[in-house]
Length: 134
Image (cartoon, rainbow, N blue to C red; front, top):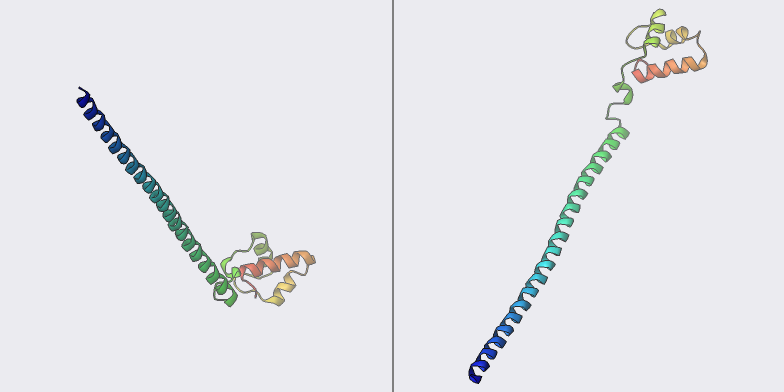
């Protein structure tokens, strides 16, 4: 009986040793997997940042092109984009025989002679914005 107990004890010790080794291996794998997961997260964060940087670089290049066009005068001026004059200004000019199209500056000055200085400046500014006078 003593012999049987010794064999059982030895077998239990061997099983315990195997279990400890297995547990150690599993812990090592978990640690390695955790390290890899952290690396993957850092890599994906770097990729996201790289995409954002690329997107921002494209926007910057576009803005710089637009600024260069505006400085060079190749982009349409803002006055060309706006073609409307307020109705009150159109009516006032029509009363003095000044219609659509380019406005003669002498005729404009004659038409605006009854207005105050501020009103004349306002009308001329509106016509400049509309592209009616240069």
